[in-house]
Length: 91
Image (cartoon, rainbow, N blue to C red; front, top):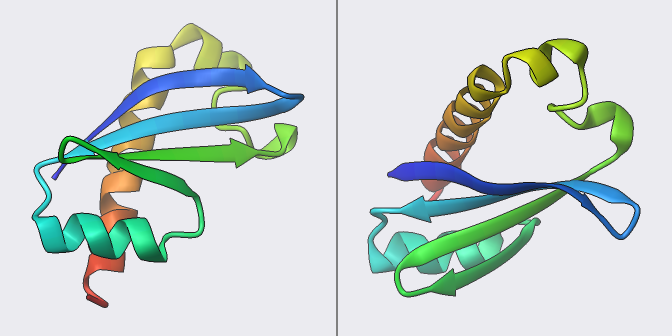
C-alpha cells in the first residue's frame, strides 16, 4: 500500500488533507470505500480519501509544521498507512 498526501489546506471554512492510496487489491478498495467514515472515492484503482479537521486538530498548523512541512507530511502518510492497515485487518 502506498499512501501519498496530494492536497491540503482550507476549504469552506475547514482544514482538510486529501490522500491517494495505491497498490490495493480490488477487494481492499471496495472494503475501504464502503467502510471508512471519511469522504472516499475510487478512481482508476486509486482510493481517494479527504479528511476535514477542526482547526485545533489540523496537523499542519503548528510553527514546527510550517518550518519542517516535509517531515510532517511524511509522518501523516505513515500514520494513515498504519491506520488503513489496521482497518484492513477487519476485512
